[in-house]
Length: 361
Ligand SMILES: Nc1ncnc2c1ncn2[C@@H]1O[C@H](COP(=O)(O)OP(=O)(O)OP(=O)(O)O)[C@@H](O)[C@H]1O
Ligand SMILES: [Mg+2]
Image (cartoon, rainbow, N blue to C red):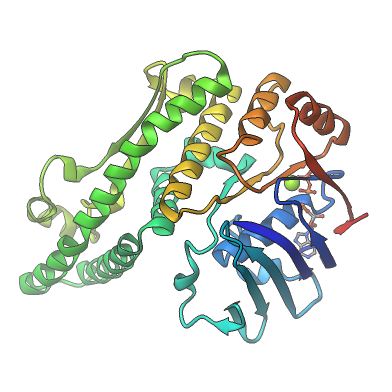
């Protein structure tokens, strides 16, 4: 998938900007706060109809304005041209159009423009709660498996209702109805996560070894209560506890993904550079799986390229992504000289944009 050009109007600190992109590596350089990440976020918005940071849509409108508009011209790897327009107005909300036609549901767009982001915010995957890792898995699998996405929507709706019910003094029959709704979808989600982590593991290992140029053993494992018993049994066993706690204490909403390095938790025992390398390996593995499933090379966003990495690892990363497996790449860095010299060292072709105050110079 290649984004040929993007028009950005009143999105964050970007008033009006037209960018013509290279199908290969695009670099955005400029000072802190210039608007480099905002450009990447605009591309993310076109792909997934939301910001890559967890802001509300309204927060992406340029201060003092009423609306933002993003207009992307793309083409698939088989060269079909496409247009995606995403607008958000304070009054009317979000509208997403694909080749001029508005979507009935925004979820229909998910997966159409595959994208993978590497950003400093990824550390949340290591340090924050399991919820962050579940959200990651959900977003990832939803891009390749519609059945998973629909099961997840139904599971969450049933869970919400069940929890509401638990706050009243619920009748047995009512709980059983919700139990069966959860059971009907939990297996799809469980299987989806399980098989995804299985497919990810060898790829993460491979990319990590390439990046780190050494063989620290790394581990990535899926953890779910469903590994011990079917959800039906778990729910029955937890019935009294659920009533006392007034919420559902077992289920796939408590799953986790365990990340290890050298046999120990990455969070506690990995250095910052090791953690970052692990996260990049994870994202490159995600890229590879997305490419396989969608038969389309995703757009790769590398925000703040040098964040926590030494020059050697950055050069290694650039050599890797400049290769045939990867397609269009957007990179940001605040140091033009450092970025250009590392790209040249890696022997990569690139197009450079200098950004200042929300505009390309
Ligand atoms: N809704 C908004 N309206 C106007 N300006 C905004 C809005 N949201 C964010 N900004 C501004 O955008 C700027 C940040 O842009 P961005 O995060 O793209 O910087 P950057 O070039 O990536 O910097 P860094 O090198 O520090 O990562 C800030 O100055 C911020 O005030
Ligand atoms: Mg930034």
